[in-house]
Image (cartoon, rainbow, N blue to C red; front, side, top):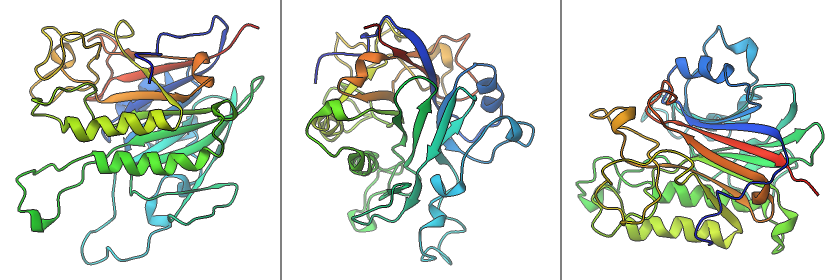
Length: 307
């Protein structure tokens, strides 16, 4: 993986604007999305769409995000529902057309309008068709936390997220059918619950395991776009458990923090090699622009490169 490719931005006209945002099941972010003049939203931790917004956005068929649609009823008697905070691809403007992929169980062969999904509440995908540019695939990623098996007697109350991230990567792999990265046009963004570059003494991460996430993305030809400084403000002082040369930009704050005191980056964007040269990403992470969630927005712009 190159050191950092998020600064690479073509000097062409921006043709599609994408917002990636973990909205934490809140309603106010929906209203803020409508004020952004964006085309597509890649959302995570979505609950229901507020009624006063529902006729202004298009969330596509429920099959593209709701894992209840393809799962069996094995969870009945154990859980009321499988999950209640979903990744989702949302159409925000008429400047693009969207073809959503319906989720099906992790089978070996899918139909044209399907994606095989191996994790509940981790991924949503769609094909974006701009007015004047070639289509591309978008993937909204949410590496949800998974608790260790009871036999471990683990004290990890929250659990680990890397297994969800790897399920996402495995599902994303279905859109890569050639070793030539130039045949792919894929944008994947979202909340990976991973602290990029965490040192081995970082108590908030599983650094060795988390590094494998970036390694696998790189192996698929998915270039890391960031955001990294200066495409967003950095935390000062530098958070513990990060190298001195970190370029991380905080995208999440805890209940003990605020947008001004946010420490860690959990949200990232990737694009397939070649296509990545047309894509830029920045973190809207100043206190003034943060937005109504504990995660900030990632503003992603796709340009039509000048020939």
